[in-house]
Length: 32
Image (cartoon, rainbow, N blue to C red; front, side, top):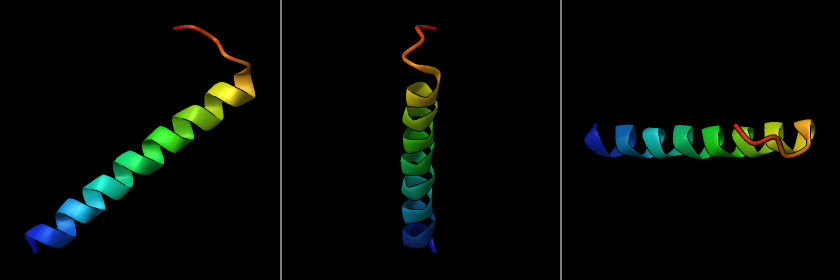
């Protein structure tokens, strides 16, 4: 149970980072 939740957490983080980069590329590099 702990292993699957840990993998799920990593996947969520990976998707979040990828989504953030996708948004940055879409906007055109905007500094926050």
